[in-house]
Length: 206
Length: 181
Image 1 (tube, each protein chain N blue to C red):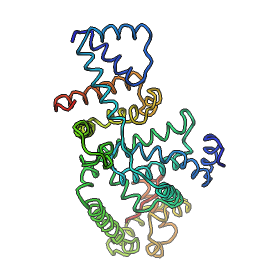
Image 2: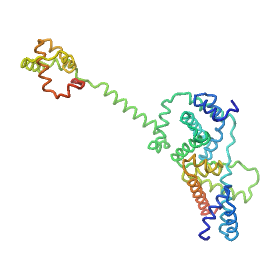
Image 3: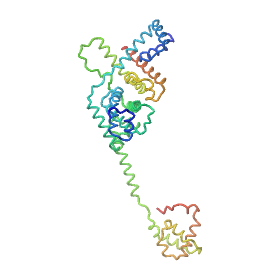
Image 4: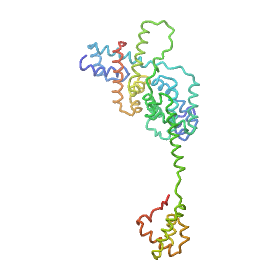
């Protein structure tokens, strides 16, 4: 086989596939094949190989096979995607797919993940939060609030009090104070707070 | 609805017309099933994959813009889906093109030799990289032109030709090494 054989072998493969060669290529190939036994053998082998690949025996299938297939597709299209679809997609996900074929790992892993997720949700749902009333009824805080409220006599808008209602959450405390004391209390608190905090939604004590 | 063109059926199918979907599938189901069968070599796998392919096609039919023919688009979905399946599937004893029906004629030396060649050829095709296997199947078994194969595999015609040449050269080398060619 000489170096130019690779070029002719490419032409041979194209010719076997039924690709049209130019008349110049045809002539050069014929001339080369006449002189090169290696390429003649190559052509014979490739022709045989090509024919063998092409000759596929297909399974004999009834029309009903395809009718059932079509019905299944139409039925699936009219159904909503359910949990089985989720499992199937999970099985196709490559990290899972590598173990999918070994057995029943997907249902097992899905079940464990589901249990963990359920446990996490249940835990979060039942976590007890401190209620504002419990804080407002704390004796130490109540006395501290009273002390602070008597220190100043500045007026403050009652709108601010209403706006900060959720933050204060001390209706019980307010019942014990007069209006001036309440204004003073709010004024003192607002001086101690960072200015931007008043612009934000209070998060309460929970 | 029998004589309606693909284009008109597609328009109806995109609006969710069940009859149009059924007609469109009826036109391509055999072709796609046998193509997938030639790739996987197993009737059950081919059936499941064909079902998945058409479900995917009709669920995404609203995204089909008509840049290629509907047939090419279905082949493209089928090829991607099957290559994905083959990359996950462990090598099996599947056999698409060696599933020779029993031959009632007495076994001649030529026939024995040919069966041997087919057996080895099947094994050689099985170990080809999936993309090479797809090109060999599309080109030789489905007899599609390179321009269409290039659209299906989203590559250039030159790239397809080179990949096919590499694949068939590799097959020849394997069979020569096993002294069956």
